[in-house]
Amino acid sequence: MHRLNFHTAIFLLLVSPAALAGDPSPNDYVRLEVRPAPATMRPGSSGVIELHFFPAGGIHVNADPTVQFSLDSASALQLTGKPAMTTDTSTGYLSAAVPVKQNVALRKPTAPGSLTVKGTVTYFYCSDSEGWCNRQKQPVEFTIVVTP
Image 1 (cartoon, rainbow, N blue to C red):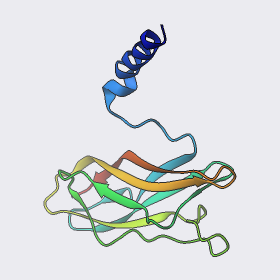
Image 2: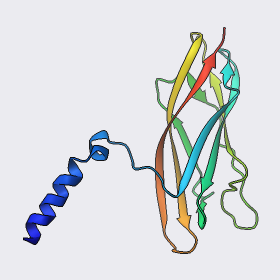
Image 3: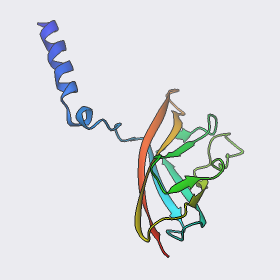
């Protein structure tokens, strides 16, 4: 009977919508907002993508290893340099009060209009009270308006 329950549980896990979609589960411990600045760009111009982390109480985002940000290879937006992060001097963790900033450039030529950009943010977060840490690989999507 235990063998049947085990196989049933595995089957239900494999056919669950989350497993079929292939997306990682949402992070209940850290909310991430991605904000382009400016939200309107011209081909050949530069901007910044801000990664705002909002950890739940008792959770922190690690500064080491660093936050990694990548864009899909088909994107008209390209990363320039590495993400700029601010560490909280009292804890040594990533400061949740200051966004991580990634410089970007819009490639020439890029057609005017709305540009949907997809990428991935990878970071580590830990529980201060329970002593565990996890890696989060979170898909992100945002829009930039391209002007002539």
